Image (cartoon, rainbow, N blue to C red; front, side):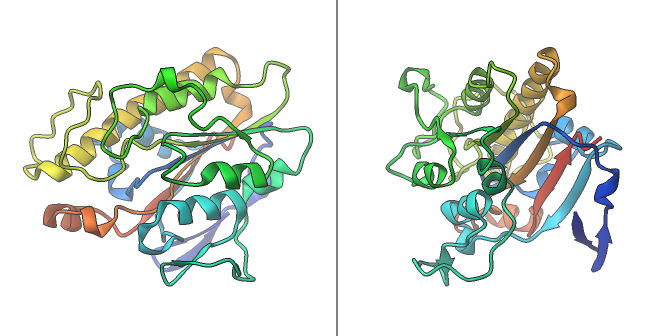
Length: 272
């Protein structure tokens, strides 16, 4: 992995990274680097500081205009389907590396996606199928919770639980792509999520609500990892936490613009 930090290239020798059978990619909706702190996401922050974690906090988003489908398309396929904020069919020749695409080529891997929103908003299920991912998109409508915004996102807790429920039972290695969505804009309407975090120093209601959702997501990540440990899967699973894009400026209050970072994180947990 080569990261650009403080305008210097830092290369972590991949020969020192132990092989893992499984990989879980958590492609968060609008997760900003500023969230990765002891105050807002203490569990993820602690993991980011571990000696077995590779963490880069200054990744530039690859999607234009903070378009979710653009960032998700890059992760799934390595292709960027947006040019100057317009969808194009003649994708650029240059491709980014896509772990999902590479693993989906292997018959040995059980590959699937769990995405939190309705089909008529995005087209991730089409992309997922094109790269050989099993589509668990809105599979169980009865599991939808009241923890949804006007965009119709499933509760992140349900999304992560659905991921665990669909782990292979035949001991095959797996590649799971998860897209939690509770951090999606707008941020001025409180969602019905089980999170009583109160950040007294955040006077701006939009910034407070955004960070409250970050804390809720952090709690669900911790529960997810604990369940992997209970099942004896954690030690053999690489977990990648990143974001499809930074917070869209159109939904940012002035306080959010001042407090949030222009970057998204890339955190590789349990590299060994």
